[in-house]
Image (cartoon, rainbow, N blue to C red):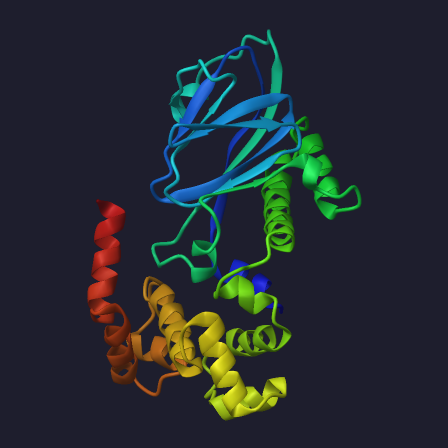
Length: 300
């Protein structure tokens, strides 16, 4: 599996359809996104997206992805005052006035830290319909998405799957047209050897990797890999492996019925003690304290 697919799959985001309807006349609603992100697709008409006092005009076929914590408004026009999306959806539509087709998806983020790759993306990732090449699969996915908004039987399940497809295509399209200009995952994805190395690590994070074994796997010298890795990602190879294992273990900590010993061995540590020691070195607290903090955060 390629690196981007591994990152998206490991994110473990749950999607929920917030809006799937055709709106008429004047309207406006606010998306509070403290613990969630998501995206909007305009299947018909126009609207305004407002974020931090700035307005962005959206047209049919435009896609905008918002990261976690990015509160924003969608408005029929700049003069409208938004209400919370939950209140807005309870309001009956008059069926009169200009029509706007909208599909809005919310992604719930797990309590674990978001992957560093997503922190490299802008708070608002906008893809204009006019910037998508005619042959790009995004067009086909958007056409299917638009068609399903008019259906009733089975539409919700199909829309959930389609929205993931649109999201993945949108991320890939944005990366293609916005090449990285600084160190990070985007730079790594543009380097064949670095991408191959990361794919090996992510495919088997619990494997007893060494710089030598990884260098042999991608066909470069040990010194070359060590230098390139630190230049592109800002950390050493083995520090990266350690962080990946600990992050994976942190996600497993909240699963019921899992002992610390089992989790430690699954992510590549010989014992719960060794895992706990590495965990505390990275997060500054013990695994048990981390679980308690996550539980308190969810129940607050």
